[in-house]
Image (cartoon, rainbow, N blue to C red; front, side):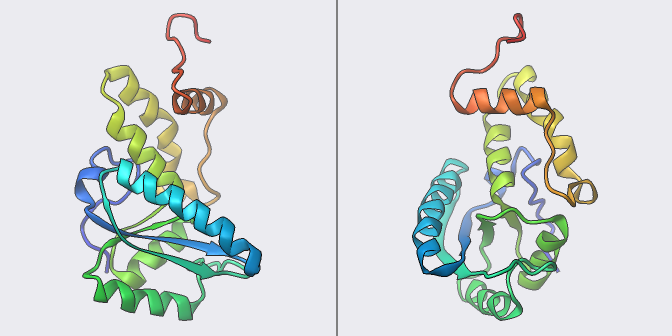
Length: 179
């Protein structure tokens, strides 16, 4: 059973609650491994930005995502054993997980599991210092925070997605002009 730790990226304190993490990515084919390694480098940087310590990284071959756990049962069991050896760190998966896959992995591994989207949302939440900033990250996050509403993945409205993309580029949209 997962720990009582709230693991969702919608939790503004998730960066303070997670300490050690393992980052996991998937790849298909031999050439996909190089791309997966680059993406894992990015996920490691996101994990550090969130204030966590990356204790290990892993690339797992996935020909087709398993509907229940994303990874096949052999990979899930191997990763469970490795997480036990490492003392049960949280897991950050570079791929987009459905709520069902995330819940099943948390149950199988007994640790919090965040996908890349939740890691990014947690960074936004942590950096939101003004009341307006906190309300802006919360509003688009409503559809993501409830696993039942996230079955098809996160959905952001146009204005929320535009704000997030501008904020990532360091140019937050002006409140007075709406542009």
